[in-house]
Length: 521
Image (cartoon, helix red, strand yellow):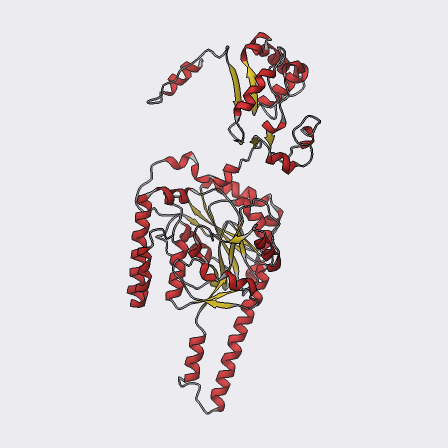
C-alpha cells in the first residue's frame, strides 16, 4: 500500500496531504524524544563535509541522510542483505531499526560519517560517555559539562520523562465528559496492612501525600520519612497495574510495612486535589497527620522529630492541667464546679496547627540539606529560597522566615490573607472543601477554616520541606489561561466565605477581602 492510499483510507476530515519525490532531497531525521538547544542549521551544514562514500550517521535518533547518494550506493539492497545474514544467528532485534542500521554500517563503514557527540547526547541509564570523549570531541572532561553544552538531548529509553510529568495528556482523556459532578470510585487500601503495625499503631503522626502521579518522587520521599505514609493517588485502572509493579520493584517501598496507598479513580476533567487529601486523612492510622503535597521532600527523620515534639507538647498540657487542678483543690475549690482556673486552661488549650516552613529550589539535582544549618547555607548561596517568594509571597509570608532563621523554639504566628501553610494537625481536624478542584485556593480555604475554628498556628523551628522543580500541570495551565475557570473560582471563594459566616458567625465576614484580590490563589 502506498502512503497516498494509506492517507486516503484514514478519511481524516479537512486534511490535505501533498507528496513529493524524496530522491532529490537531503533529510534531517529526528526522534520525538529529544530537546534541541542549538541552531539546527549548524547540523545541516555537515552535509557539506560528506564525501561521495559517506551517507548517514550512526544513530537513528538523529541522522543526516543524503537520499540520492544512498540510492546510488544501493543502500536498500545492502541493509536487506545484512539483515537476512544476521537473522540466521539472531532471531530478533532488541532495538528494531537501530540494530539493523548499526549492523549495515558495521559491514561497510564507508557509508557513515561520524557527527560530533553534542548533536546526540543520549540520556539512557546505560550510556557510556567514553565513546564520545575522544581527541576531536568538543569536550573531554566531565559528563555534566558535556551535557550542558549539548545541542540535542535524547531520552532514548523506554520510559520518558513525559510519562510521569504529563499523565493528563493521555489521549483517552480527550473523550467528552459530562459537565455534572461525577460519582467517584475509591479503593481505600491497595496494599495489605502489616498486622504488627496495625496492632501497635503510632500515636504521633503520619505523612499525608496527594499526587498527580509524579511517582518518581516517592522513592526519595520514603527515604527521608521514617514514619507511616498515607498516599492518595488519582489513577486509571491501567495505572493501578503500573503502580503495583513500580512499588514491587523498589525495595525501599516494597519492604515497608507502613506504606498505605489509597486510590481514587479518574472521572471528569478536573483534578480533585482536596478530595484526595480527605481520603488520605480518613484512612490515616495515626492520631496526627502531616498535610503535604507530593512535590515536597521533608527533612530527613522529620517523623521522629514531630513525634517527640507532639509528645512533649501533650505532656506539657497534661502537667499544666494537673498542676492547676491541684492548685484549685489546695484553695478549697471544688473541681466539679466551673472555675476561673479551668476556663483559663481551656483558653490555653486551643487546637494547634503545627506549621512546617516550606522552601523551593529550581535545581534538578541538589545535595539535600539534612538539617537547618545546611539549609541556611544553601539559602545564602541562592540554591534554596522560601517557597514562591518571587511569585506569590502572600502564601507563606505569615510563617515569618526571618524569625525562623534564628529561632530554636516553636513560635506562634497569626493568620494572614492568602496564608496556605503545610501543617500537622490531628486526624480529627476539619476536612478540606472539595469544591476547589485543580489549581487555586484549595489550601488557602483550609487555612481560613482552621483560623475560623480557633486554631493556633505554631511554627516548628528545626524541620522543613523543599519543593523540587517540575513542569507545570494541566491544572496550572487551565488557571492561567482560562478566564472562565478563574471566574468560577472567584464564585466558589465568595460562596465559601458566606458559608463560614453562616456557620461560624459574622466574624468570618472579614475574609471577604479576598474579593478585592483578583490575583489571589
